[in-house]
Length: 125
Image (cartoon, rainbow, N blue to C red; front, side):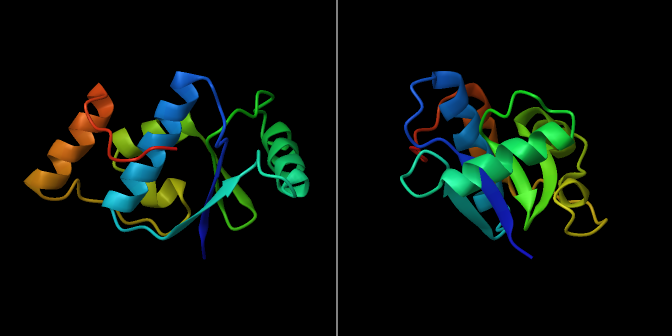
């Protein structure tokens, strides 16, 4: 099963870019395989429409990126992702199992903290 993160690669909104970076960074740091789908690329109209439709079906009328899916199954938006991460329920949120994730070692915790405070420029989207 592949986690799919729908993003906007050309967003001028700093908040959206920060949220996208945060999701991608957390998934990368926890070594969770994922696929990035940039809905602003030419030829991605079907993916953009799929994302919007699934969000509306799940009571998320504002389908702003990032949106997270497990294959074709909608997991949630950034706020849902953050809540699951804070509650150590990320694996359940991503529908990858019921086990809890450890926040990892000291270095990973520091990197996550830096992203939360905006100190990291590691991922540019």
